[in-house]
Image 1 (tube, rainbow, N blue to C red):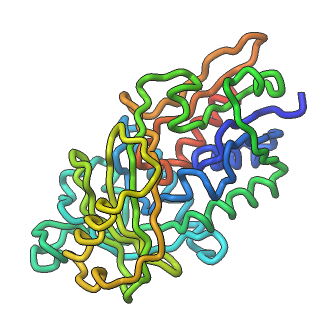
Image 2 (cartoon, rainbow, N blue to C red):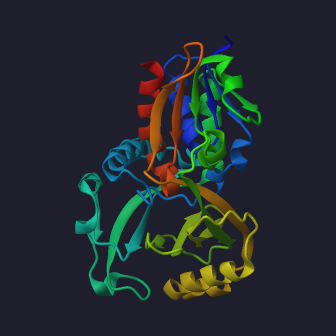
Length: 318
């Protein structure tokens, strides 16, 4: 066989898994339907924070493992796209977070007068903020430097990959609903607005996991990313003008100067959520091969990618 492993899916989960395996000395290929900079991952905000992901206990450990990696990558922000940035999580109470939060340095509960906008509760944090187009390009380069190969390929099942590698890793995200098939996979639509940054240097979020509307802005190089939505079951990929206007209005309640910022563009992505949470599981294939399912990361694929990659690699090598 020409490869030890074929990873199907070229988003953040697929690429971090492929890097992890290739740097362990395995011959790895990534089969991706899209260019890595055109995947759903490239649309992400993307702030490190466990958001809309289950199971909670495992997700916390995966997130912390990834935080350590991002902390190292932030030493070269121009190359990796990872920077440490200060900001505020509104409507968030430190005591209401999981055990993982105790291991995140610098989290601080704010007094009501410190919380920006129409909020009375908030948490200050300094976290990795990732410029995803830059980061995805860097990840692909790291993978190829380790001997990996990326191929553009559309698959209708895992049999073709299984014929060419002893292990196939399914990092197909929302597409796992049809490919596995897994009816528990449910796309969650996220819409963003990109505007000229009017001088904002800190990120802000207010994200009620029970609501389809969220409010956040992330200062990225050359733009300010405004969000957002979390519309379960909505698979429209075309930006909605009314939704975009509502996003700008919500963000302007926190920072009024956003209201007059020139719009640079719009983005839509489908978060690969799954009832029951992330699935990382190995199943046998005909002929003695192995299929490792690795999908269902919801809105936290960036946050947990490196920790999940380690777990998937364990199953590949078992």
